[in-house]
Image (cartoon, rainbow, N blue to C red; front, side, top):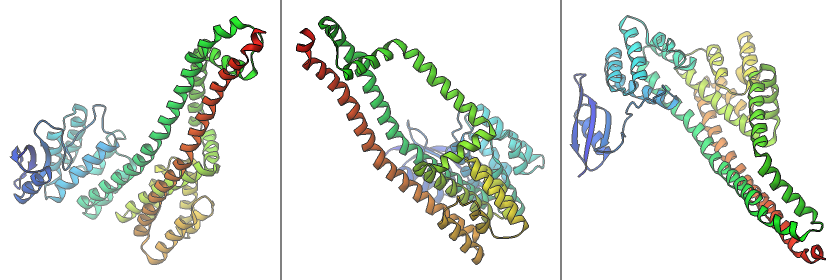
Length: 404
């Protein structure tokens, strides 16, 4: 049987480590739990760390994935009955990154001085956002910090899954575009110019399509630097435009107005908004406070404004669904589900169902877009390559005319 290395927290609160022979990694974790230990690290000798959550902090600080791992491990230790300061001490000892170790140490020291965990997290220069800090604060007030951290772990995991699904779906079309562009550049810059000396020797007037293709190849060969420079300047100017509040708002309006892209962006945002609101409400954060936090989770400034307007209306009276519907930009199904949640007094649970519904909708929409995008790009590539090949064939077939 393979040999596994492990680290765990013993019932006494001490960190223990050692090796164990077992049929699988799951068996190692099961044996540790049966002995009353809380597994922290488990890996096959010579392999990478797997299992519950090895606290792997990035060398450049904590990213969203690492914050999720930190939250999961802290919640596990608290659920196991360890005091908060001892749990933080364990995490500090496990941290392999100096910067992260320093961050966890600062949090632990703040807690040991009598401060709250939420205050300690808030002082970490934005490493933990408002949603995270406010949920922890609500958990501390309600005496349910361990449960709150478990909910946060689930929230962060689901948010990351949605983001990863979008990124993963974009990888193939991006690769397809890169390959298509590479193929065209290779033909125009390397293959087609091989025929230029032949056509020049023959003299005469070349067909228009051949001139067009040869001209495109010549431009790429001689002015590639200008194309790169212009592309760079366009990207820089676009980023500067998005940094301007009014221009960013106008751009976000145009994005939402796009037929397919706007639909996808809207679904992603409603999934994100409903998940955030549902998680906050479940944890005891008041609706107005939850709306204030949740609107900042949205990336589209137009929808941010809509949520802010709805929050102000809710403050003066009226339901959330009715006030969100005034903008006309939120899906009717989501509004109906939110309205039902308000009527039944189960708004938090219904918001989580809205999140589940639109998570699935996002994946289905991406699949539909890819089913259209892939054949369109393939067809376009075939047409362009066919045009290039045709330009050479037309010129070759007209050799007799050129010689004559």
